[in-house]
Image (cartoon, rainbow, N blue to C red; front, side, top):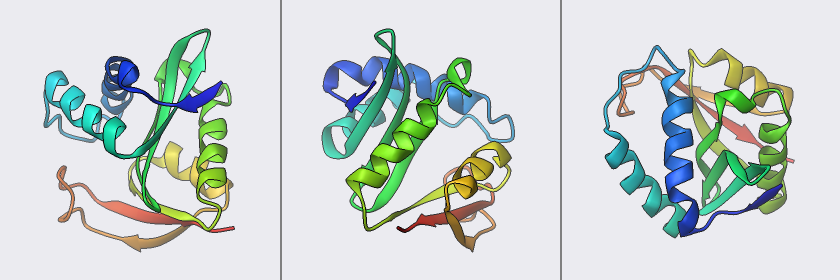
Length: 143
């Protein structure tokens, strides 16, 4: 089930983010779980955020700020079950004109996921502009 996130989801979203982000072993850990939670509370309050649920448990989330994707994570234990596809389709419905987002270049799994859905890489960077100082790529999805 896909639904809009509420303030009641912040703890589950922050815990899921921490688990998922932790699998990206090429990235430094820059924030505490408390900092993640505080930041994500603001994201849920200020952006368009959807969660995927499975048996009442939040297993994924996606956030859009205007036409820019800011977060898209699926719990590692819930990969390959269609939750990411459902969330991506929700973003397509919400932004039928398209949207863009950043992905770390080394996140090959995510890049394959996006490219399979017609997303096009627009810009590659050396990471100087992101907090992690890790090379990334800006993708765009357009109908």
